[in-house]
Image 1: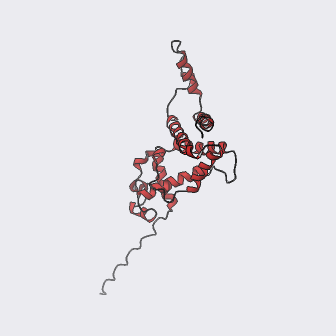
Image 2: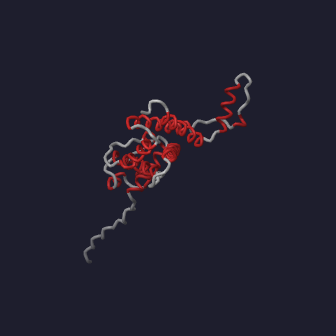
Image 3: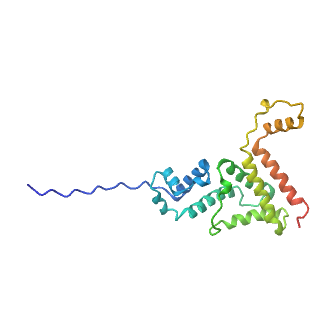
Length: 213
C-alpha cells in the first residue's frame, strides 16, 4: 500500500477588494445613521464585511479616518465654488447652503472636527476667506464673520429637525393671536429656503454693519 499523499493545502480566494474611498464612504454612512460616537474601525469594517484589521491597509488609525472623512465632506462643499470669479455673495450663499444640506443629512456632522490641519485643503479655506474680503470684510474681522456664518449654518441645520405641525392642523387661539400667527407661518416655511434668506440677511448685516473696519 502506497504511503498517503500529503493533503494539498487549500488556497484562500482573493480578499474582497475595496478602496480607501469606500472606507471613507462607509464611515460617513455610519456617521449619517448613528452619529459620530458610533464611528469606529469595528462599525466601519462591519459595513464593508471585512475584519477590522483590514482597514489598516487604508488608514493608519481612527484619527486618519476622521481626517479623511472631514476632507471628503469639505471637498464636496468646496465643489460649489466656481473656478472663475463670480458674485462673492452668491458663491458664499451656495457654499454655506451646501454645508447646511450635508448637516441636515448627516447626524452629528457639525461635530466632525479634523484632528490635524496637516493635509487640509488650505487653498479652499483661503478661497472662502477671499470671498469675504472681496465683499469688503476687513482682514481683522474675517474670523468673526466666518464664525457667525458657521454658527448660523449649524444652528439652522439642527433646527431643521424641529417638528412643526402642518399649517392646516394649527388651531387659531384668540387668546394668543401672535403665537397662532407665528406657528402658522412656521408650518408654512421651507427650512432650506428660510436658511438661505436668513443667511443672506446676516451676511449683509455683517458686511455692511458698523464695526467693519
